[in-house]
Image (cartoon, rainbow, N blue to C red):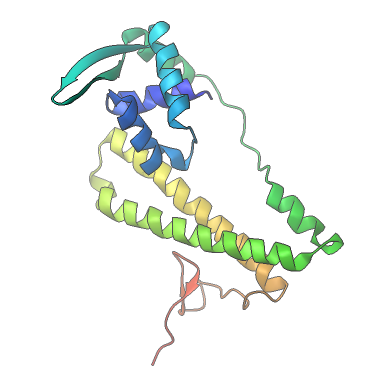
Length: 202
């Protein structure tokens, strides 16, 4: 997948300027595809040169004109062809897994500290995804086709964060850096959405 395809999808959802697309990357798209604003602007320029997007110059009071991009018929054809092309299977390739495997040969304490920080990051991101889900998709059963696809991608993010929380938590617990993880299926004190202990019953 190239950034061009990501931008085509984003522009099919809603046209916008380079700045607006950059903000959408920061809020949503960036959770699964990273791109800087320089990369976005350069790629939009190439897409315009190739005829994949149409550009409208919009005057703004007291500010420079802005360019608003929309997918052209050619761009829509390119996107449809790409969507129909099988993607290679995703494979987990993560440096932290190699560190976890090799921790016996170095400073395990430093690794456990790093994993503790990562665990906190994943818990915070899961909470952010949950908040987005509640705010943007309060009734998934009532969603239209395109909105349902966006919700399902967000659901994938939720499940991915739950995976990282469980895996890192198990590793940390196995080496005494966390209490053993409660099984949310049998322990009512554990929140299955965050894998965090709930308050002790009074």
